[in-house]
View (cartoon, rainbow, N blue to C red):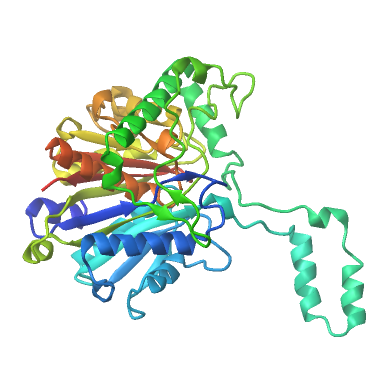
Length: 437
């Protein structure tokens, strides 16, 4: 058992989530299309500190997740923190654990608090899929570097004379696993086949995601976690709510969509997958005793967490099924104790594969070395505010959204325990147990 697990159970220290906030998540190329990741993250940090009534100079530590960094500001956490008024003497850094990046940011902050290196920390993340860096082809990059060092116009012209049409083919950020050459969607298609996940089950889960998200938006629950973004620099548009939610979605309509990754035999479509999204999120963390000494009522505490990694050539997105039993054990709880489960919906097939694995005795024995399955996830407790398929998935920001949503919903329902899971590229996964206090 980890030091974190022992500390949590012994009651020596607990990290409180004091407050949280996120931008509305918007489809790439829409409302935030002209913003930078720094600006979107800065706005979120300013709003978080305002909501938490915390002075910027009192923040000791800032960590943000970001998967596709800007070439202009690769350490987006540092630039956003400075822009939000946090002291220049406060350390800030950016982490990348793919889709689990903001979970990593949060647990990094928690570890700083538990070790006594910080008292007040902000963890979160940002992603701007509207503004991904596009590079020249490598031969062109090499030529331009050589030209910048060449002396004299003749030498430069000689280099440029070697340009060929293929040099102008751009290179976008990789969408395939470096180790396997398969995209995440192709890998999940393989999972769906291996685990016998039906197209109908995937479309049903996607439909529920949209219906739950629409209901949570319409009844005002999403207002607890989002703020209105008056979009700079023109300030003519306002992001009020997540714009990927389809209230008119039906299982029948979803069933008519064509597969994307395996057009002949596949089951994964644009409708049962999360889309490209812009957004930012952040939570404020403090030691629980400090928060209470200041008269604060935390949303809850981080009871435990666990990260796992598996061979990406196997079932790429099944990492959470390996992380969940460790997180539950460290919390001293079982899956039956969980009042809510927030599971990142990269693809419906990935969620269904994970819940199937957790309920499987064969998986428990052969993969986890356990005598009994971890347990069954009650569908009524799963993603009750909607999931990433409907709300959207800004890679670096999703994990913080899940933590915040879970604690807010636990508070609304008067329940105690929640489980958060996120799958990530590279065969990784995270599970976190949170507790309302």
